[in-house]
Image 1: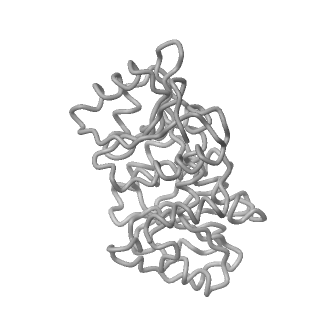
Image 2: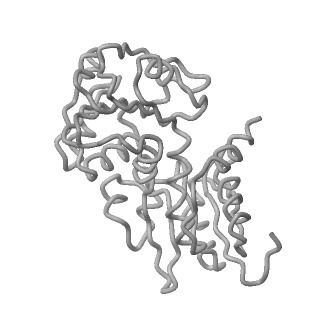
Length: 281
């Protein structure tokens, strides 16, 4: 694309940011829809975060995505924020409004739910309990999304039980905390199993869990997308369960920000998946 003086500018801010797939992802959409705009990576230290945000705003940029370690600061710097960002306690998307205010949102839960809908369109969230592994920032977003979507029961388990208890206490939804050593028993009768930990990610330890007493009707998802088929998803596939990989969550969570900055609700399709994955080849 050849930019004009009217080009809309957005980007992603992190420390580091070189690993981010967002520039490639948004660049694909900008090219696809013929939009006069650009999306740039910005490596910003924590000490310079507020200065950088206000500088972007003063320069006429539309907003930015925010990744680690800036997500909590992004919520605090905003003048207004979505209910889900407040519940999660962090933001991954900032929008600079025409009135000079900053709006914060957290689209991770949106991306998670949209990924499930796209990957398993016939699956019913309300058909039974969900089991969530992990109690970090990603788990917080997933838990809020599941609760808002009407999941009838949520079972949360984490290697450090105290962290899971603290997380469950912070959220305004009934969450049953299960000891990590009892994670396999928690799968009885479940309708969804989601891994939000780094276990199974390339370079990390495998996720050790026996799923063979879990109903074959359950959906199994993993927010990890490197590799696409984690050891959990491989086991679930062999067991006969439907599986959803983590790449779709990354792609769908980018949609709300792109729509705000560039005025188009972009499509997540097979060509986009292939293009984003090709960066690693």
